[in-house]
Structure formats: structure tokens, C-alpha cells
Length: 139
Image (spheres, rainbow, N blue to C red):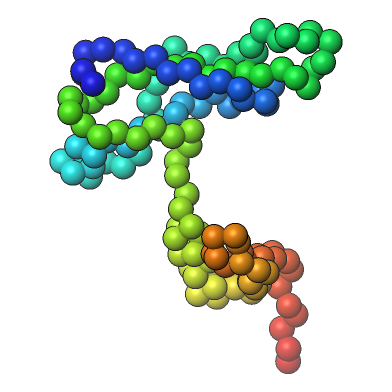
């Protein structure tokens, strides 16, 4: 990739008629060089962002409409490894850390109850988090 070139991406076959991209949301980019040099993680990028309905073969069927997201990106470095994503990634390990933090916080632990419902097809634990009124204090 070259740094002085704008690359256009078009992602097709979305099914939602509305998108936050029409309200200013941008895709995110992770650059390995930026991460190594400046400790920069994911950043919002993109220009000329458009989200639009594609021409439909069946004009009468509203449910058959598909949509396209298109945007341009200039990459920060040549010979870099970059990743583009729809939104900031949230890993399973991030979820587990958040659940532990909730459990270890006295205030949040009073209103948040956790239990394991089952395992996913990949073997990961699937947690049920119930947020409710705190239990009354016993005297």
C-alpha cells in the first residue's frame, strides 16, 4: 500500500435500512507500525463515507433491499500491516475481565448477579448477568 493514495472500500449486502454511518460514525483502523512506535491502538478513519440502498430487483418487497457502506482510507505507513473493522473489537477475554471487575466491585456486585448458563459451540462459557435492585440489608 502507498501512503499518498486514497483507497476506496465498499462493503455490500447490509440489510439494515439505517446506519450510524449516516450520523458520523467511522470505521476503525489498527496499524502495527503505529502500535509499535507510538502505542496507538484502534483509531477512527475514513472519508467520503456513504451508506445507501442498492438497486433492488424486486421494488415491491421492502424486505429484499440491501445496502452498501462505502468509504475511502489513506494508510499511515507503507509496508504496514493494518486491520479495518466496523467498530472497536471487544474480545471474549475483555468480557471475562469486565465480569471479574464487576464481581470484585462491592457496589456493582450488590446489583449484578452472574451465573454460567451454558457453553458455546466453541466451548466458551456463556454468562448470564442479571442487574436488579440490591437485596435489602439484614439487621
